[in-house]
Image (cartoon, rainbow, N blue to C red):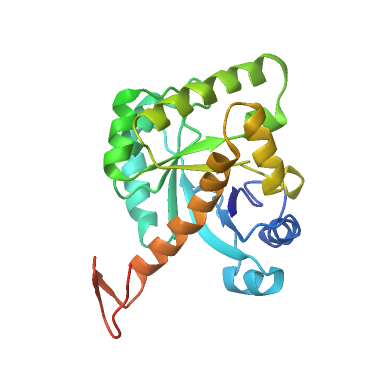
Length: 233
C-alpha cells in the first residue's frame, strides 16, 4: 500500500522523513506529489534504499485554467512517473477526467469543487483515477468536516455507480499527518467506506506507478510489445 504526500518545500517534512515514517507505519511506498511550482530536490533511489519503501516521483499540476493545465501536463508527462491534476475547480475537474495523459484527479471536491455523473463517465472511459482525499476529515473540524463528509459520500456514490478507478490518500504535508493503513481503514469504515475499498485505493497508487514505469521503460514498444524477452502485462 502507498500514500501520496507533499514534501518540503510544498510541505513541512523532507521526502526522506516522510519515507521513514511511511516505513514505520507499514506502507510499501509513497508518491511524492508536490505541485509543479514547488518540486523538491531529492534522489528517489537513494531514499528508497535507506528507508526500505518505494519512493515514486510524481507531480500535482496546479493551474489557473484548463489551457495552462494542459501545457503543464504535457511538460511533466515524460518526467514524472505519476501526473495528477490539482482539482477543486469544476472546469479543471472536467479537463482532468477527459485527458488520458492524466493519472489522477486530486481532491475534486476541495474548495467549491464538484463532481457529477458526466465527469464520472469520462474518468471511467479515460482511466483517470479519482482521489478520495481524507485530509479534511483527518485535519479539520466543525462545519468544514461535515461538508467534507458529505462531499466524500457523494463522490463515493458516483465512483461506485460508474465504476470509476480511484485512489485513497491522507494527503499529508508533514510526516505527522501520515496515518497507518489500519487507521485509514478504521476511519473509512466510520465514514461509510468498507475496509476493502480503502485498501484498494491505497494499493492503486502502487499499481499505477508500476504500470507507468513499465510504459516509460526502454523495453516498451507499444501495448503488448516489448524489446528483448517477452513480458506479460
